[in-house]
View 1 (tube, protein in one colour):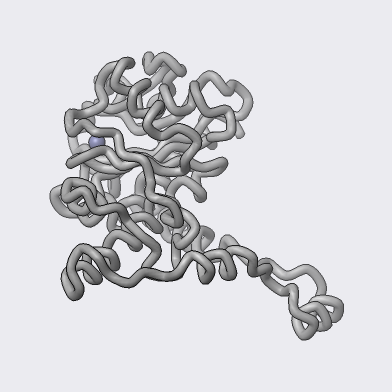
View 2: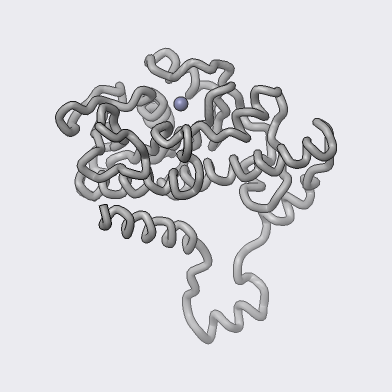
Length: 258
Ligand SMILES: [Zn+2]
């Protein structure tokens, strides 16, 4: 992927964060997604700061900045610097070679439950694997603006796919931008249903038993004989990615319209 193609993808990813409700209302300008440059893995693309209208739903490829793994600006439009929390992306991408994309957003249900000291447990199917075990918490509310804070947050993240930032937000990671964004969306979805459950039943309530989580995670699409028979007849079937394709196409359409 060329730098221009990377900027295009990150612009779409930024818009998708707004489309799925993770950067709306008072959080319209908060949050960012980054993508590592596969041809130059020591660099990544992310939105900057300094735009006249700094909201994610307005991001365009030409608004993106290229940074290195020290969080330094490599390239960007005039008058634009790195986003405030560029160190979240720089430090995670430096420490985790398995990660190519990082999302940081301020989703309210995840933040609220973490402040209350209530771990998010499996309550609904979507994102069940992500919250199977309690996710780590980085115990600071201040923005991650220094390399020390970025490294501390990355230490809290460890090998997990998500980390809560106490009273602040979440950081999620993925091998692809789709993985990182879906992890953020799944986490907030689970947090929302945790909030409903706690509102009904208090802080200690029923959750999906781990044996059920395991059974779901063991499920393989199209493994059953009736599907195998059909696949043998119709050929290769796309069993995933359709939601992301839809989001990406909608974001691309909105971008083409202005
Ligand atoms: Zn933040």
